[in-house]
Amino acid sequence: MLSIGSIVIRVDDLQAQMAFWQAALGFEPRHEPEDDFVILQPPGGKGTCISLDRVRSSVQLPPRIHLDLYTEDQSGEVQRLLGLGATRVEWSKRPADADYVIMADPEGNRFCVIDTAGRRQTD
Image 1 (cartoon, rainbow, N blue to C red):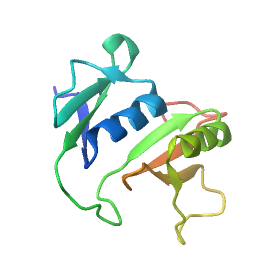
Image 2 (cartoon, rainbow, N blue to C red; image 1 turned 60 degrees about the horizontal axis):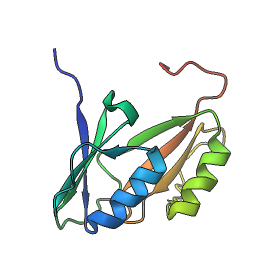
Image 3 (tube, rainbow, N blue to C red; image 1 turned 90 degrees about the horizontal axis):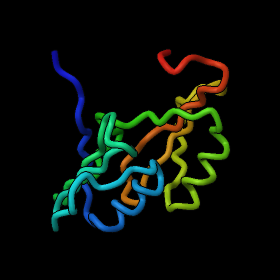
């Protein structure tokens, strides 16, 4: 059986993106970062990692893949992420009652902040 060990995000500025994602998720480098690659792991090392790979690429819109980040404090987390340098992304097809807010990291890689208040994490 397979499991997801790491999700890789292409970045231009490894140091800046590493600082953003560490602050956003509270993750820490698994090993000393290389010049062009780092694996960020959850505290304690258990769970899916985020790897940052410094490879010149352009952001694809709409993205073929994105992260869904779960929280019971969506408003608070969105404000915190904006303060870290993320931006809010408007999408004309987003339903008015959507439980997600679309955002982008400082380099434009998109992710959603999902409101889990009142629902099970496995939904």
